[in-house]
Length: 501
Image 1 (tube, rainbow, N blue to C red):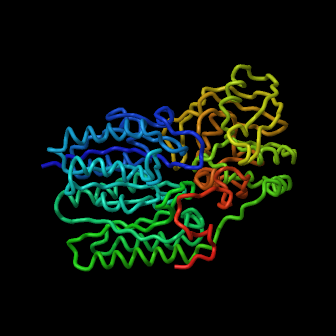
Image 2 (spheres, rainbow, N blue to C red):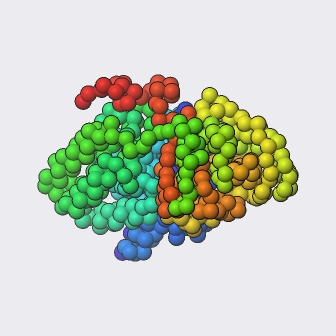
Image 3 (cartoon, rainbow, N blue to C red):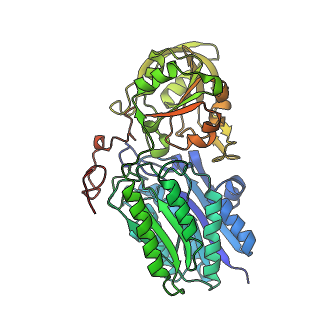
């Protein structure tokens, strides 16, 4: 008899230092679809939902997908928005609970609503109140989860991404689905335990392409081959959330039916957590000042590909505003040639530019409008409009290939010899189509300044001659002391660099 599994996706990474609130409109702008419409939009791409569908086909489930809801990283989620989306999931579970065999969810792990610190734990608590303690619940988390004890208590199975840039969402969805199938069939009895250390995040934010975490992820994969161990998940944490349960964790889902599995899982979790702690000073990134980055760009030979300058601190993917101007100003002051920059998230400027026509020269205030204290204030610029667009594009890279997005009203403004992508919608740079769809060919440029921490590497590193990272002083600056933490437990690294275990 086929199993009846209810699935849903509800994902947000909440930067508690960002002004405002994340509302339903923000989810609608990114991804908000129910049932078959969600499957049609996201079910064949690199998503958790696609992995759930793979598991369903493999096991012959009756799979019922409720909703896919995802908003770009931003301020805390408004209660009305959380209640609306969580309510859709809970209502579906309530209606089907007597015929339901399991629940499979794609979450993030760093959602902070405006009424509590743990959005995922709150959702799981509401679901447990409906289905009780015995219903198997499996969840997939982003690698940057602040995984809490409540999540581990309420979800039997937890699987996190193992790649940053994130390219294994579908794979992890399938893994979680397979473990859930074994649970529903009675072959295993899973539980998840947690280990953590007093850190804001892993020193390299969980990079899986370089640095100390490469070996740690490999060790986790090796552990998953042992009897009684089903998932070993390493979460780098999300330091832009000022909450009590912050920082890197190791989660191990083990089988309570296997003698000794719990003790072995605990040993694994502590070993990997020690590895994260022991490498806390081993940063792979050198965060350049913007003037130094621009100077490197001035002397760069692009014959083997463009220089990529990533503004780590103004990454919209961690909830930064995406309108910091310090890097663009440095690039303009250096009079860089054949360069591109984007995105500059400035709805006011984008709207102003789209009232003109291609070829017009326009003078305006660009960027720096949200909080000039972080990353620089507005720039007075003049340039030629090269393109006006509704902002729609389809990704073709390893992270968002095949998915449809929109920047909203968008323009390309050429300032001196720098093509600046001015957009309305919130998104980091992680796919070449975010430039190409608007007439900017990245491989043909000499220098590209973009706003992203790490995800850009998946699509842009293969075409680059060199990659450098800078800190423009924006909201997600790695200079943690510039943020006013009030809720994180102290002492904690690196705010307290001499903390000991």
